[in-house]
Image (tube, rainbow, N blue to C red; front, top):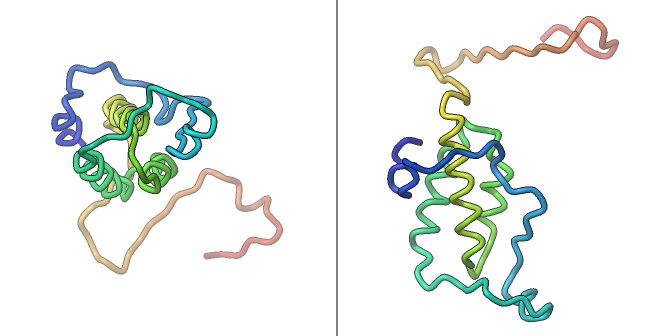
Length: 129
């Protein structure tokens, strides 16, 4: 994640508390033309966006909190300027939450341990797993 933050030039940027801005509308070009929205131009060089999204997909292995946003950003076509801004916000969110995530220790491949803080004893339809 530090490499992603550095490569995007957001090392000095202020972190944000949420991965996606509230009430953000990531619209298509057709929608913008129909409604008459202007100022949200299509990016000519989408390689940077695609590489960033590819790296963020890899990060979702240990950061499940960003899965929805990454899936949303990766499903867009005709990338516009507000799409790249949303991706940069996600990187700023990651910058502010570097210590979060799933820690995967090296060990036996066939052993997986999980912990849950719910009260299994109070659930009548549960069984010992």
